[in-house]
Length: 188
Image (cartoon, rainbow, N blue to C red; front, side):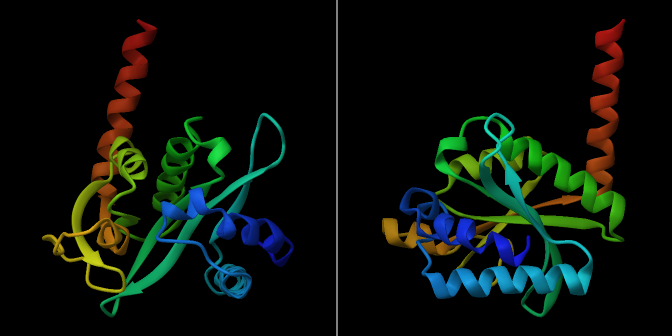
């Protein structure tokens, strides 16, 4: 992601359908801050968020990447993705999620990668599960994501509760081995 992506990110952040899956829309100032933070992240860590093109049209379709986050004074590498609503259901989220997991474990000296979503975003949760991440807990926005469950309640509460998923390097390796075994079996 670079500064030139600001108009696209601002458009994404203003899209009510898209941002309903991430807790609500963001204004232009929040979008400027988001892009600036992501540009700085690339400079500091050497990895970060990408802006993705729709392979069918060439138009910008979404953003995805790996980012270093701090929660409860612990650092973690988190994968994240968001796509324009007209790109939903095309398999892009699963494809980029699997690619980011592979990239993270191949390039970074980490044993765990994580991802979060608002509790009500069942489509994103399904993508995480299909790509090997497992549920580890919930928290209110800004709170701890330790195992267990945050108090439930209204629909507004659903959008403020984050669910955390993780995959460990050993789990990913095992999944890679299974995928290889399946390919070999298909070739026989």
